[in-house]
Image (cartoon, rainbow, N blue to C red; front, side):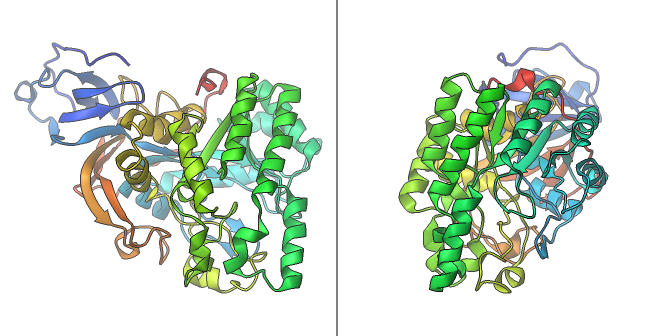
Length: 476
């Protein structure tokens, strides 16, 4: 975006955010933001719009604050059932936690259980969106190819769902074979969509887990050993080969190792439209958590890696090789985790994180790591919006974009405390972490929903967002 404009407007607007530093992915500087009808009307020179000329306009003083686009979390599981467990939050709870953490758009998943129809599952999940405090989009999911899938994918695209999750692990539940992956990639390519894929080689994991079980090392404290880094890199290489063979785009979720990121970066250098997502816990936590008193709380897939791997992954963010940072939010609680802590094969995988994603990454990568604020906005807001067909409606503060704004206090220091958070669980993996930088006021669709850390507008205003075809967004 260009520098802020000067204006001669005198008629009232709904809201003025005045005196802050606006930060977009491609520009930042002192500016006032004008909001009307739920949209950004303008980003203008400080003081260019005079409230005295427009009685009834609400003003928010953003002095000393960063004014960021609302966060877009590209990887969020709401009420997700896997195996014998269902995560504990609904749309209302998940989006309440999201807005308190500065996220104003989540992208959820509609993952079918065995025998369910992908389009039907997506329709049921899409119908929940209006219970939220903020907007949501949706990834569909295909497990097995049959003659009905092409028409289902066309119908989903017609409904604005153009990204489809696939798994290379969890055999017998969500795992898709290579031919199914290729067929879905090809079909989505022609529809302007993209496969979103969880890469871990199931045969390697199964063998490792069987050997662990035989040796008595299959409990939560051994989780990192049961899903080795090799399983991830082997699967990434195979999926990249499939995507390259059919010239289809592909997005890799929660990449946890530098090697996996490098494989994608090299493929992108060959012209493959391939993109890396990392998630907050893989950038901040390491496998020492499995030696602590509650290893089950940290069981996720892929698992937490060793400290050197985490450092290498963080360096890839700083090098610009990572397109997006998500939360992979799965809101299980301690009781669910503890019930099968003796066997990670039966455990619910995933960590709660939709509320902490932005504060933890700002503190660890911007404050401590030197990541520029504009790059933070790029990986947390703009690129997730682009790669999900939501940009420039989301992910940027610009005329015509949705008025989703976060007034961010870059100096506020808090110690993460699960009892002060809003997720529907009894723990956070970041308990006790000192974080610098936290959202103070959050505006959703032009309405202040969180004001100085308090919920001030509890009315559900969430909408299911239709994603545009993605061909114009593959420049991330």
